[in-house]
Image (cartoon, rainbow, N blue to C red; front, side, top):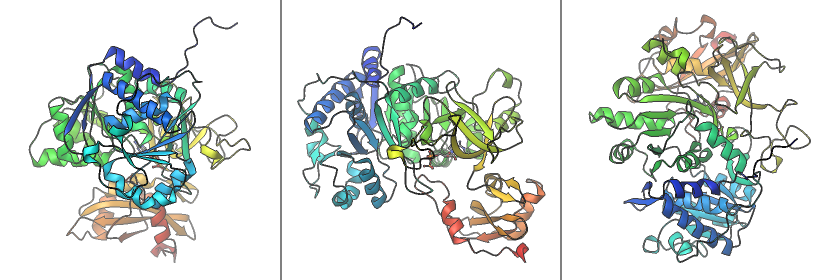
Length: 548
Ligand code: ADP
C-alpha cells in the first residue's frame, strides 16, 4: 500500500523560493572582487537569479547542460547557481587553484557550454580559452564599468547579461534525481573525477548537515562560508543558510587574517567554516594585534585534521566552539562531525580537547564502517584500524562518464553498496571516528599498519620544524619502513638526534622512523594538503640505513 501524501520533487530552486518568503530582507553581504562591501537580500537574490535563468535560456542553456563557474564566494556566484539549477542545468564549479591546463582538461571533460569567471581569474581563462572548444559564451562576473578589455571572444559583463530580464523563468518541474551540480576531485591519483550531485542528494545532504548536532543553523545566525563554493558546494552552506533564512557573509577574494577578521566583527558573524590553513592566518592576526572575537560562537574545521594548537586557541583563548568535521567531495561532502553529546558532559577540559581531535560521528543518513583488506568488518574498539567505507543518499555511486568504474554498470561500489573513502580509520564504541591515514599513505611494516599522519602530527611539534611528512620506503625485511621528511623553520637547522629524542615515548617504538631527511620545501597539492605522491616519487630509490 502506498502512502497518500503529496508528490513534492526535492529540487533546489525551492530553497531560494523559501528564503525569499521567510527572509526576504535577510542580507547577503559580499566583499566584492572589485573591492567595496556589497549588500543584497534573499529577495533581491531571487529576482536576479530568475533573471540569470532567463539569460541562460537565451544563451541556449537547458536541462542537463553544464554551466561552469570560476569564481569566489559572492552573491553573484550564488545567483548563477540558483539561476542554473532552477532550470535544470548543471552548475559546475571549477577550482581556480588547479593549473590552467588541468582546468581546461576538466572543462573539456565536463563539456561546459558557458563559463562565468571572476575578474581575478580572467587571465587564466584568456590563456586557456583556445583549449576549451565546448565553451561558447564567457560571462565576466562584474558590471560594465569594471569590465576590462579582454581577448576572450564575445565576453560579456554579468550585469549586462542579466540586465532588464524578466523574472518569470520557470523553475523546477523536473525529477528530483536530475543532476544539479558537478565538482571534480583533485585527482591525487590519476585524472580528476567528476562527482555529479543531484537535486535530491544535495537537498537531503543539506537537511542532514543542518541537524542540531551538526551545523544546527537558525535564522538568527550569521554565516561566513570561507570554504569556497568550488570545494563541494562550500560544504553545503550555500543551501543550508537560505533554507534556514540565516544572514550570509561572502568573503570574495580576500581570505587573509585581517580581511576575515573585519568581516567576522563588522557583520557580527556567529558561524564560520574553513580548512585549517585559513584559521592559522586568522589566529596569527588575532595574536599579533591583540584582538578579540566578540560575536563568533562556532567554527567548523575540516578538509584535513585539526591541529591541536588551532583547537586550543579557539576554545581556550577566544571562547569559540570548534567542530571538527571530516568528509569528501564524493560525500557532498559531510561525513562526520565531532559534536559533544550527553555522554561527554562529565569530561574534563583536557579529555574534551583530546576527543575533539577525532573526526567525529556520522549525522543521520550517513552510514560508515571499517574493514580489513579482504573486506571483513573490523571491531569498533577505538584501536583497530581499517579501510573506511560509507553509504548514504548523498554519497556518489559512480563518477561522471563512469571514470574509475569498478563494476560493469559504471559504479564504484562494492556488492553491498559501500563506497571506499580511501581513508583508514578507527571507530570507538561511542561512534567517534578517527582518521589514521589515507589508505595509499599508510605504511605497511611487517604486515602491520603504521599511521603516517600520527607521526607527522607529533613531528611538527619538534623544535625547529615547520612541516613534516612521513612516507613508506622499501625495506627488504619489513616491506616498508617510515621515512620522516622535515622542512625546517626559516633560519633554523633542527638536528636529527633532537627530533628522534622528541618522538621517543610519544609513538610506539616500532613506529620510529628509520631515517630523517631535511628538505627546503615539502610539496603541497592544489587543496593545500601534503603531496605524498610527489614525495614518494622523489624518494622512490631511497636506501634506508637500516636496509643494509
Ligand atoms: P581531494 O583532496 O582528494 O580532492 P577532498 O577534497 O574531497 O579530496 O578531500 C577528502 C579527503 O580529505 C578525505 O578523504 C580525507 O582524507 C581528507 N580529510 C577531510 N577532512 C579531514 C579531517 N577532518 N581530518 C583528516 N582528513 C580529512
